[in-house]
Image 1 (tube, helix red, strand yellow):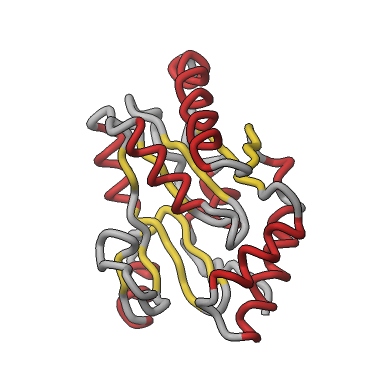
Image 2: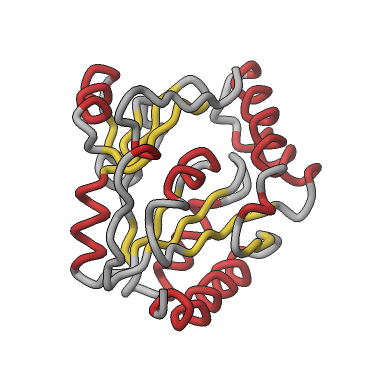
Length: 210
């Protein structure tokens, strides 16, 4: 099953573009197993002034994940309420579960002048790209496809079928990396986080003048 974006009437991509806020949105994408969470932990340790936007998901928590820290875990009915009430900036079905970003959460943070980091898949990034002015889009890459496959296998949090699904989806996501402003290779967590922080700081003049 490939990631399939559902776009009913009034879906995020069809609605009015967000006005230019004082804060900035930093969108980080990358395939499963590339190390997004680990790199983000290092990034926030180095730059505590950055804020993280917690997404909604219908998938069950993994061991060690805390509600409203890793994600806001909701059931299908609650997610549908958020979706049908136009409360999501973007949403998509990925690996058989729904993921989405609360628009009010992002809007309020940006209006306060905060720089918000959003970890989403390539579908969500495509929906946000035409709607949020000045957003920075960064794609996190593995050192090689073979290394990504190894990381997915050693993570041991998925069934064999789920692992193959994530691997196939990872290959599809890697093909979309050219649509991002920047690409960062996660060959070393500290180095990758440092490069992302440099991008954010270097990109500020461009975002401020849009």
